Every structure is written in C-alpha cells, then in structure tokens.
Length: 315
Image (cartoon, rainbow, N blue to C red; front, side):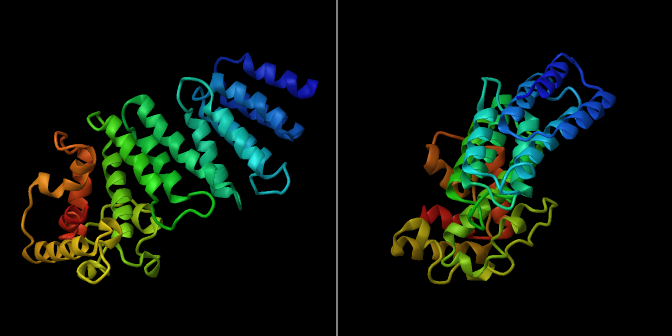
C-alpha cells in the first residue's frame, strides 16, 4: 500500500460518522487513485469494520470500491479468481460479530455482476446471509431478502432448482430461529424454497421442466399468487416415477403415489402431525411444527393437493 493511499485510509479511519459530503470526497480520492490490489482493498475492509452501517453513503462507497477492484481493476476483467474468492471469504469470515450487512451485500453484487465466480463463493454468500439471521436470533426483512438474493443468483454451475445443501442450510437456520419474532417474509421464502427442493426431488425427470422448477419461478417474485405454481404438474403426481428419488423403493413410491391420488381426490383436511411427517421424522416426534414449516405445509396443500401426504408416505 503506497503512502498516499495509506494516508487516505488513516484519514477515513479517524472519522466516527461519515457524512454524505465526506463520502463523496473520499470516493473521488479513492477512484482517482484506483484500488488496484487486494493489499489496498485490505485497508477498506479494516475501515468498514469500524464504519459499516454508520452511513448509507459509506456502505455504497465501500461496496462500489471493492467491486470495482475485483471486476474492473484485476485481470481477467469481470471474473473472480480462486485467489480473490479466498481473500473475500477470509475478510468476511473474520471476527466473532457475525457477517456485516454491507459485506454480504458486496458478495451478492459481485456474484450478480461477474461473468464467472468460483461456486464456493456462492455457497459462502448463502451461509453468510443465513449466519446474519442466526447471529441476530431472528429473521428481519433485510436479511431475508439477502438470503433470497443468494438463492436466486447462485454462483458457478449450481442447479436450476434449490440444492440439497441449500435446503439443509435453510432448515438449520430455521431450527435456530423457529420461535423468534421473525418477519413473515422468512416463512414465505422458506416455504417456497423448500417446496421447490421437494418438488424437484420427487419429480421423475426435473430437467424436463426447467422453467416450472426454476428458482426464478419459485422465489424470483415473492408476490402471493396462491394456486398458480404447479398447474402443469398437479395431475402428474400419480404417474410412474414420482417419489422414487425420495423413497428409493418402488413399492413405497407406488404407495406414495396412491396416497397422493386419494388425498387430492377427496381434498380432505389432514392433521398437522400427518402433513408434517416429513419434518417430524427428521427431528423427532416430540418436536412441534414451526411457523415456517407450517407455511410450507400450507403452501403445498394449496399448490399441490395430495403432494404432502405422498411425501409423508415416501419419506
């Protein structure tokens, strides 16, 4: 780090609260100098550790400067190298205070605008967004949106639908905040994302319906549109192949298809314990169904009558 840039870092570090004017002034100097190396960028991370959240203007400056360093100033342009991914993960993982909001936002912007990034950076982005929820002890709307953004634009060659690792991370996060005063958007996102994973897992050939099972279709637009997600597959739950990837046993899969057919035809109300069997089997019968899991069950009941009962039989 040269003396001029080092002096600028020291100047910013001494500011307790960054004003809009100060941020524009610093931005002019920063971009005039150019952050051309990870060593220079280290200084901004140190500053951000002190100033994060003190001013929206500073947060915007920090994100823009680091994104510019990674995607514009380094070669090849618009690509994140393995070394740069290691550096980002190391910087954002530091300290016992949990991930900083602006640093998670930086990750999400880099992944969104880069032409290519290592897949593990996308996995880390979701882990960091979920870690903010668990560290806070509840899901606030801003962090729920960060989780959604991490899921909607995964890095690398991630699956078109929610992966097993992503679903497990959401379930683990929900377990830790299940009875907190979470923003309702958490229950909705959890329901849609886990239902997407279950539907893709139960489908005999999910690749044959890429648009219907895509992340964009399920969590790209969170406006409530009950009964519209699975119109093209509702009648197919009883066809050969459904539920086999879950049961790994054709006799159980066939029984699951029969239960799904019968349940869908009678459209009968089923108790929470019956509908929630997939969750209860996972964590033990002495556990109650959380609000997010209840939202998942209700979502499946509206979108795919009989599917939840078929899952309970196949699991």
